[in-house]
Length: 451
Image 1: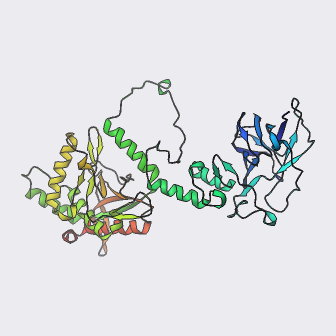
Image 2 (image 1 turned 180 degrees about the vertical axis):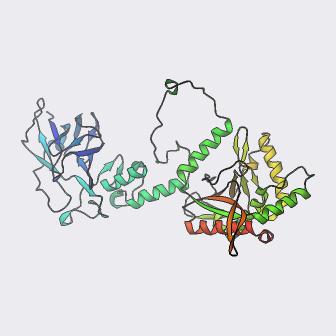
Image 3 (image 1 turned 90 degrees about the vertical axis):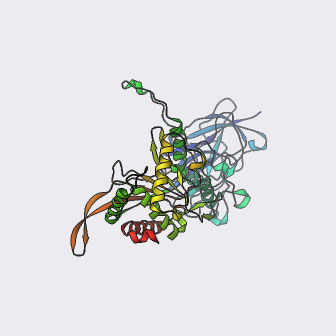
């Protein structure tokens, strides 16, 4: 007849009231010897408490958040087959992070509260302060500890913790270690590949976030529900994907556009009778094209493997357009091959089509880089979200007159705030700073626009 046995918290050294951070089983689960039952966490280490024998979980006595000490009852298990034979007690291992877990047998009907035939199983213990957790290098005397399991994944507690911190679903990670064990490099490579292949929030890439709380806002006062426009729904999903899958960093700079603005006003007067306006954005397009040629890594995209950079030999730049229905980003093509006046004309035409809902899908494809200009509205700086698969986007705020130290005195100059968000997987901070500095030089010196 099968026997129901108690499984207690093993000897965990001098630790008391240790928090349970994971309960890996529930009543009715079939468990195998050394399969983790719960995971404990102290301020220094994480430890899995494994099943000492095969069997079926009858009752789980703890939950996540509970605090336990040595001897506390964890679960009761109905032992089965050969697993019911409890192995002889093992000696306590000193001097390391290993401990011995003892189990208490009980009669089939009455649970015992005192040990009668203790058994032992080495729990999987990993110090957070060690770069070589137990099970990777082995315990005292060169004996390797059993491998912990998370679903179908085999990994040490430290790797399981590392995966949890990154939001990675460990069973999705293919292990490259001995007997398919998941290593730290495996988890890092999985995250890298997931980031290089951005998918929707429900794409199953293993990056997990908490569910949004469901709140009845009407409890607090009058409300009105307004449906999002189709454009906002589409762009919202893309923006969310880009924000959570691309490591954004933003570099800020100011450009002296005093001479550029004076020249722009001259051109505006000259072309006053035309159907388009000479806007600062036309100059920004041209300046960005020149800068992108000088820094080709910004005119690139990661391939689907995340291992290669695709350098583009053309320069198509997307321009964010504010429409009544939401933000749209039509693309101006071959910017490097066009002059200021032609760019101003195309900008006027493509922006009008976007606002009149006459823009096509093809008009918004093929961009290498994007510009989001809020200069006509206001602001001093902001952090634009990268438009994947591009690796950078330029934000532009309202220009203002500022005192600039020049030739021994302060002089009033028109300064334009620039905000460059970039993909840190591709671009480092030094490259971003050089990019914005060069762009500011181009905008401040009209001669460079002719290069």
